[in-house]
Length: 124
Image 1 (tube, rainbow, N blue to C red):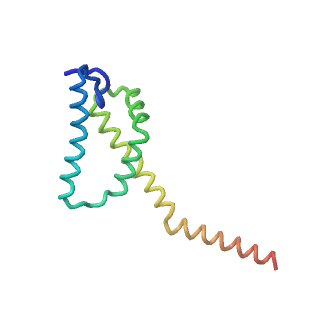
Image 2: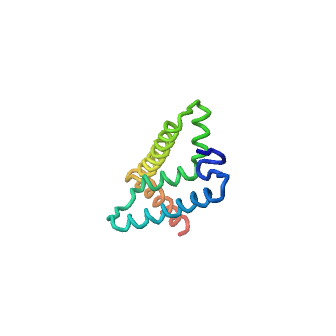
Image 3: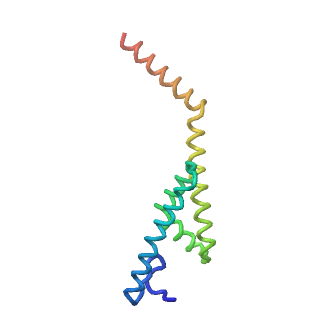
């Protein structure tokens, strides 16, 4: 076991080891692709799709904050990041849907209608 470099792309001393590591990654992608073709697909829920995008963009910030708070266990940091992203996206979705509710929309529509009536009265 050689931990030189990064875990996602470790630096192996021998070219054969580096080639086998890279080839194994490519083969794994094709195996997953082939296996997935025989399984029926369901659409990914919007919450999880957006949470994965949030994690992709902001995981360095989330991890840095958790490390600054003293969390050092990799599994705990990973799970807390996942939960944070899902909760953040869920909260934003809830606020957006709450803002788009009938009360807010009707109030805005009434105000816009009143202002357009005032504009028509002043122009006549």
